[in-house]
Image (tube, rainbow over the protein chains, first blue to last red):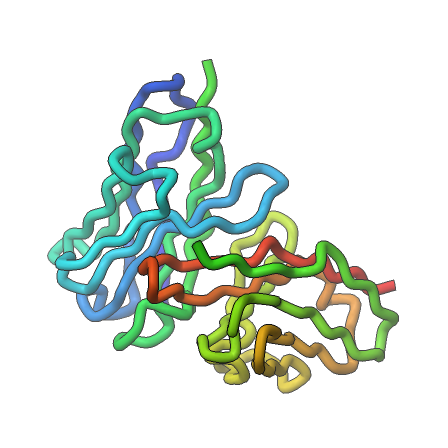
Length: 121
Length: 108
C-alpha cells in the first residue's frame, strides 16, 4: 500500500524557516516524480514544487522561487521542502504527492494527509 | 501564466447528472486531471488524461476535453459526491502545474 506521511509543520514567525519531510513507503520511491501542493485555509489547491526521480529537475511556483527548495533522498525514501524567509501568505496545509505513473509528473495519484504550516508573529 | 477557470459552485439533485467545467486557452491540447476533495481530507484523483479513471473510481465519473473547455461529468449523483472538485494541467510553456480555482458540488 502506498503511504505518504508528512511531518515538520508548525508555527513559525515571519522571516523564519521550516523543513518539511515526507516519508514514503509501499512503492519504489526512486521511480516517481514527487510534488508538494499546498492549500491555504478555506482556499483552493496550489502547486508548490516538484522534483524528478533522480533530483535532476526541479520546478517551483513563482511565489516561492528563491525561498523554497525541494529535495529528495532516494536511499531514505524521503521528500523534503526547505522553506526559508516565510511569509504570512505561506500559511497552508502542505501535501506531499506522488505521480500516478512512473513516466510522468502528472497526474498526482497518491497524497499524504498534509501538515499545517502557520506563519504568524 | 496559464489560467484554468472553474465555476465556484454547482448544485444538483440526487440521481441527476452534474457537469463541472474547466476553461482554459486551447485546453483541448492538454491533458486534464480532476481531483475530488472532501472537507478535512486530502484530494483524490478521480479522472486523469481527460477521461481515464484510476482503479477504484466509479464509472459514474467521466471526463471530456475539447477546444477551450474540459468537463467532469458525474452521473447518478449521490450524497457522498458532495465535495470540492479541482481540474489540473501541466503548462509546458512555464513548466508549471496549474490548478483551477475549484468547484463546490452541492447535492440538494
